[in-house]
Image: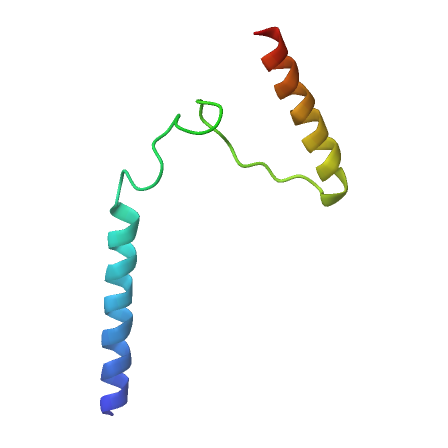
Length: 68
């Protein structure tokens, strides 16, 4: 019987830890401090298109730098 009470107390403490970590604000790198100085967004693409998308993005970055 004591083993069951130990398991319950472990589950309760784990839940409290998760709530604390979720409520932490201001964690991580500040917004706008990345390479391009603007907000970013994660995007999923098919693996077979990865190189094409990366090449396209590189061309766009180079064109933007050349225009300045």
